[in-house]
Amino acid sequence: MSNLREAYAATATASLEWSEQRERAIDRVAAAGLAPRLGMDLWRARYQLSLPSFRDAHQGLVELYQTRYKSESPDMACRLVDEALSEFLGPACTSCNGAKEMILDHLRIVCKTCEGSGLRRYSDFERARRMQVSLQRVRSINHKLSWLAGEMGTLDRAVNHAIARELERGIDYHLDLL
Image (cartoon, rainbow, N blue to C red; front, side, top):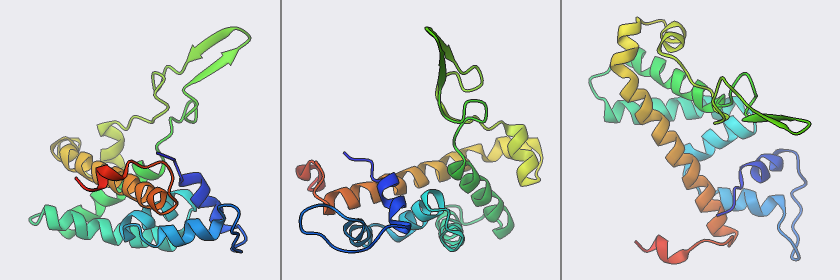
């Protein structure tokens, strides 16, 4: 399946004229209209750096979180969503900036910080400091952060799938029937 994240992000500055011969930005914008709203808010916040979309994504994620974890205080729900969004929006390793490895002449050096994953690993200590809660509290809510991260990943993939389906980009349509 195609990764349309960069192509969609480019629509923010592209001409929206239509073409019968090739795919244009307007085609991606129209296809995005059929994607999940919260997923599109996440895409716009991450790939187009849209502050209004960030706010909408935050509000939508707080509502989603409170639907799942009804007994959580509104303040803690906001802190958890803030942290999860921060990690979603800044996933690259701070040492290699997501490159995973460097090649010097004929020598390949794998990033020691991320161990070649390209992803930043957030420690419980960092999370506690950023959320302004105790280390023990962070350890007790890590599964909730993981759940939020999973939901955001699912929404991200759902948007990519919806746009790819509308643009008829190599999707196995029989899977949609399952």
